[in-house]
Length: 436
Figure 1: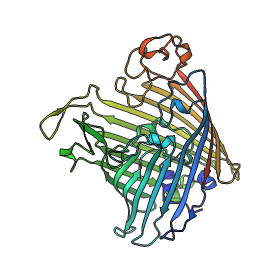
Figure 2: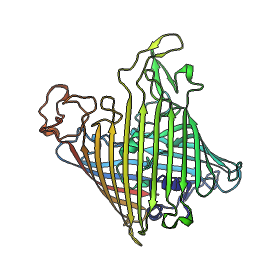
Figure 3: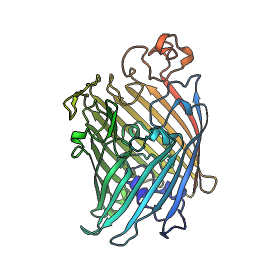
Figure 4: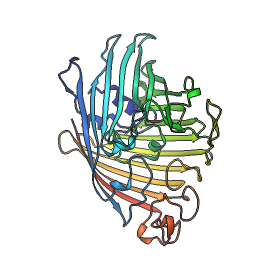
C-alpha cells in the first residue's frame, strides 16, 4: 500500500504503526476542480464518554478534555481536507486546506488576528506546497499555516493509537504560520527546518494589546526579527538491521516568541521519540519525551517609552515521558494499544492545569467492523501524584469527586488534597469515526 507523506511522517515520529494505518486509511476521493488531481477527504469523529464517579467539574488537564465532554454523547470534530499532493516532478506544486470543525476546533485556537478565538470553525492547515530541485532529491516547502511537526501524537485523533491525548501532546505547540522545508538526505536520514511568526496557534501570530490597541506577532519593535524557529531530524533503520528495519528515531525543537505584552517572549519545546519494530509480527513499541520551558515574565518597554506591567508568575517548565505498545493481530481487523505516562511540572507556575505530578495509564481496543469506520473502546486512569499547581490545600484545578467536598467560598465543590478528596480520575470512552 502507498502511504502519503503525512502518514509516513506520523509513523516516523511513532504516532501510528503503518500496519494499523493500512487497515484504516481510505483512498481520497477525486473532485471536479480546475486542478484535476484535487482530492477531498476527511472524517467525522464522535464519542461517548463516561467519567466514573459522581463529579466531573474538575477533569485531567490534557488536550481536548473538558468537563462539557463528560458523561454524555459528543461530536468531537469534523475534518474536511481539500488537497492536491505533490507529484514526482522536479518543480511539483500543490496545496492543502484542512477545516477543523466542532468542539475540538474551538479548543485548537486558530483564528486570524482580530477574529474571535473559540469558534467551532477552525483552519487547521492551509498552505502552498512547492518543490525546488536542489541538493539531489530536492526540498519540499510549505508556506502558510501548518501543523506542529514534533511529538508522538497528532491533533487528528484517528491518526493516534489512542483516542485521548497524552500530556506530552498537551505540552506541544499545535499550529504555525510560516515557512518550513523538508529534505531527504537518503533513505535513512530526513531533516526539516522552518521559521514561523510565533509558537501559538493564532493565524498570523499571537494577540497582545496596550491601551486598547491590538497587534500580533512579537512586540512591534521586535516584529521584524523576533520569530519562532523549528528544526527536526528523523532516522530510519535500513534493511540490513533485521527486524528493526523501518524503526525510527526522531528529535525536534521549537523556540521563539510566545505570549502577550507582559511576557518575555521566549518559549522552548523539545521532543525526542522512537518507534521500534520487534521480532514479534505485528508488535511495535514506542517511547517519547517532551520538555517545555517559558522564562519568568518581565517588564517590556513599548516603542513610546512606556512599560508593560511585569507578570507575577515565575518560570514555567514541564516534562512528560510516555511508553507506547501497539499490537495488530495478523490478518485481522483487531488491534490493541497501550500507553503509560508520567508528567511533572513547576508547582506554582504550571503549564497544564491540575496536579504538578500525574501518572496515567491508557488502554485502547480497536476493531474495525464497518467499512471506512474506525471503532474503539478506551479505558483511562489519571492519578494525582503531587500537589495542585498554585499551592494551598483547596486550590482549584485538580480532578476530584466534588460530592465529597467539604470546602466553601470561592473553591466550593473542589475536593481537598487528602482526606475526603479523590486523587484519581477514571474514564471510559467509545469512539466511532467515519472516514471519507
